[in-house]
Length: 327
Image (cartoon, one colour):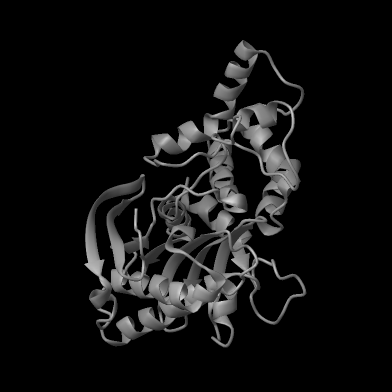
């Protein structure tokens, strides 16, 4: 684990494929590297992390509270990827709904569930409004499990196996180091839902920024389930970041979208997540000059520090534009 992100950054490069994270190697750079001119995508991530840790030092932001994954999509046939603590498992809050969306579209494509008006309504509300109630319904439909009173050991074991259906699906695609088998709640879970989490929450949902960026990449490039279903998912993820919002947690105005203010014709697709202790965003951005990228940023213990995520995005935008102008 990285002990000090300002003085040493761990770099992860991966071979990207439709089936999830691929091969990678670890390289270690010192602080002097972070001061050199931007030469690679990893330099961009290094600088974004370093500047965030410096800028928000007065907020006590630490490297262990930050994860970033960036995928450059200027060449969609050869996307480049870099990350900072990208394989750290973190409670994803509502970002997990991105995985439930893809699973639902897979189930629909395979006709494992019926395509009903109610299911479509729930998918829309889960992604557009980030409704927890809609998410609970989707998880029930996909896994054929429901909440309720506690079950006996054997019944609970069978119930948990059913609930792990979504995990098994993403494992089959090559995803690792994630757990996507819990509902999201506005307050707390009770009964068998609480039991499923484990006595100390050890079975709570967990994602990495690497895995999240990979899934968003597949949606963006039309490789999630089918090209048609990927386009349908993109429609739900489209965000309007223009103007202002009275809601500081609005997905278009309270996260990465803040970094796009003043950039005409920029476009944003995203899924944010936040709780009392976490603030995350998974975004895809297209700029009018041809810069295109996936950026996933997770922060923990800084839920009310709304400027961290857009500050990182601003560095990424500026540096990718510089790199493009030098091509």
